[in-house]
Length: 188
Ligand SMILES: [Ca+2]
Ligand SMILES: [Ca+2]
View 1 (spheres, rainbow, N blue to C red):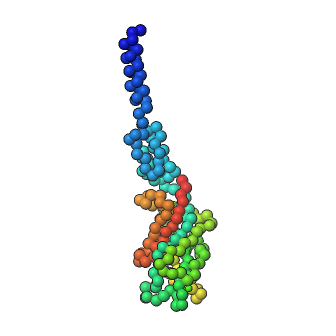
View 2 (view 1 turned 180 degrees about the horizontal axis):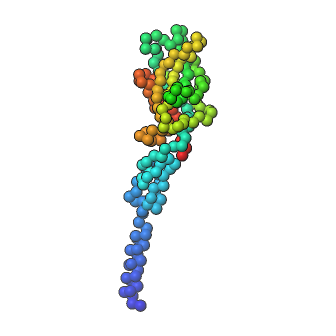
């Protein structure tokens, strides 16, 4: 065997080796927390597509926390919710269809102050289904008279493909005076 043959074979091996070690993920971009594996994106739960840019419809959307981030100090007539102190907040949530509230009253927050944020951790397992249905969330002032004035009402869908899969859903009442933030988790 000539030494030239050995050199040529060595050069061929060197080039093919350099091809082998080139990174197949060098030009691959994976969205939404996906990782590249051998040139292909491996997507986290809920995401699919070549670059993990598509969201999957969740089977379940579970409510974990409700926040009221904004409410007005008075009703639309400019009157305080309660004459001597702040409103006694509670939240109801349910399907819009027939206003069949799925929740009983969450614990009441007495004498709330407009401008502060209030929140309710959801300790029971509470699933918002069907996930693409219209839901309503109401903020009311509990009164001993038994009539509980509506402070604000927001509408939302637990899953909206244009929104993707955020960890929290922000909802404004139609007046814009009341804002809710619903913290959710998804399963697929
Ligand atoms: Ca009160
Ligand atoms: Ca009250």
